[in-house]
Length: 356
Image 1 (cartoon, helix red, strand yellow):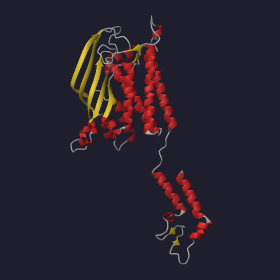
Image 2 (cartoon, rainbow, N blue to C red; image 1 turned 45 degrees about the horizontal axis):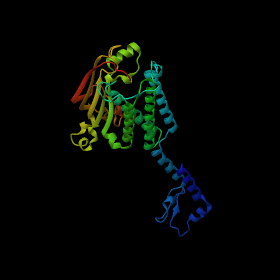
Image 3 (cartoon, one colour; image 1 turned 120 degrees about the vertical axis):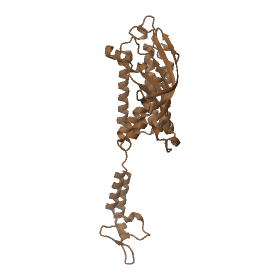
Image 4 (spheres, helix red, strand yellow; image 1 turned 180 degrees about the vertical axis):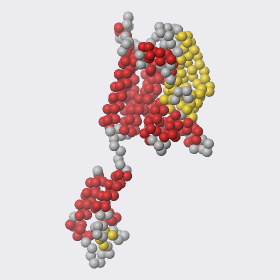
């Protein structure tokens, strides 16, 4: 807009009587005018006079077409993000609370229960996988919200990350408050929620960290969950910890000296990963029975970097597909693509799993 206004003012100035008179050539003036009205000036004349008004406007329009300003949708992006949060909140109600009894309605129950679920101890509700699940989910909401506001809404990266990470933290803090009324408020869950939001903020604002690290989940529905979904309509896929493996992945391709070396192209497709998984905790394997084997496993291994694969496949082919798949596989690992190299596990026969 400011270029157009400047052009109009310039045209008015060039077309003013005083200016025309000033530019009328005299017999001794070495310059002349062509039939379009453009001045063929001497080397001492200003370059602004080298273009007639019509040509000046044409050049401005051409430059505007070559580098159009991005169209931002701040309101639409904010409303879309709000809708996603509303949809997730609705899902949590039906998955976690719709058929549950409030603590205050239980015999001798309190209206609000503060919990201490002992983090990664083997005799816990989910063996610690739930803690990593909270961190991963908060990270995902924070990163997704940040990119939605930044790339589509046009907010600055810093502003978008502050809003996105704060909303994700508040969302899961609300979940913990609700849990306190139905199950128990978990300080461990709250701590990992916050860790996920902080990691999301750091990855959004320090590109090198984002280039080197991902925190992903590798998931395939467990038989116990498939049975419950088929028989009981259980939609609580978030608690299918038996089907989940959490990975802190280090991108070998983020090491430029390796990636750009003569034989280092393969590094774009391979990550070194620290993984953690639990088996047998949730969902319950046998209806009405809690006395079965629970196992925790921690390992160091290698895994496929699907981001690198799809970045390579769609490079210079489809930018939207490349961006969509890059974002998806920043949070998810393809099933059956991880090879543990060094691992350790521990198991216990747990009776009475208790809370949530």
